[in-house]
Image 1 (cartoon, each protein chain N blue to C red):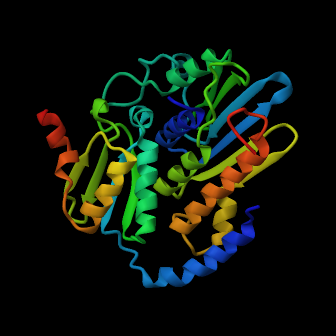
Image 2: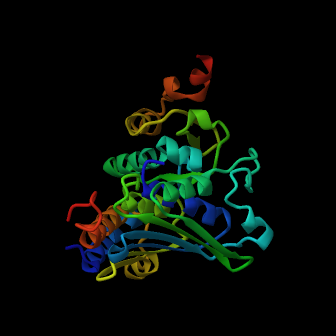
Length: 188
Length: 123
C-alpha cells in the first residue's frame, strides 16, 4: 500500500465483510511521544479467540476465492517498518478493533494519504453504513459523523454528488487544521 | 472555513432537483475494492467515476464496490452492469480510462472493447 489512507480503506472492507454498520476511525498524533495511532473499530460479527490468535497470518482468511488474505499482514508490515506495531482486539458478536502504531518521524512511515477520498468512496458505495471519523493531535480534535450529516440532510440522500463533494472538502480541511505542521506531509 | 450551514444550503438546493429525477438506477458500476484492488489503485478509479458522473450530472447510475473479483493481476477491475443484467468487465483501469468509459459506454452505449477483460486475455 502506498499510504495509510489506503490501509484504512482496506481494513474497513474487513469490517464491512463482518456485517458491521457502524465504523469508528480514529487517527491520533501523540506528538510528545512521536507516535501516530490509527484505530478502526466496528460493530461487526467479531472473531472467536481461535481465529483471532492466527488472524495476522496471511494464510488465514474468510474469503472463498482463495486461501490467502493480505490486508492485515500488509498493515502490520507497514507499522513494523516504522518502528510500530499492530494490535487486534475482537469479541464474537460484539465487534473488532484494529489499532496500528507508527513512529511519526520514522523515515519509512507511510504518508497519511487522502483520508477524505477513502471516506467519500466508502460512503458513496454503501451509504447505509455510519462512519465516525476523529482526527486528533492531543490539543485539538476534528470530528465527522455521517449520522450528523444525515440529520442535517433529512430527505436528501448522502450520496448526492454535491453532498459527497462537500464532505470531501470538509474532511480535508479538518485534517489540514489538525495535522498541518504535525505530520510533515500535510501543509496547513 | 467549511461549516454545517453550507450543508443546509446544499440540501435546499438539491431538494428541488431530486423531485425531478427518477429514482430508478439504469446502470451499475461496480469497482473491485479488496486488498488487491486497493493496492493497484482502485480508489482513484472509483473516485474518477463519481466525479465524472457528477460533472455530467448523470444521476441514474450507481457506483458501488465489491470484494475480490478473482483475477488480482488485472486489477483495478470494474464491472458495468445494465438494467437487464448484461455485464462488461474492464481491467487494468485508471482514472483516465474511467473518464472514457463514462463518455463512451455510460453516455453513448458503446463498450470500450480495448479495455475489456476479453482483450486483455488475448495478449
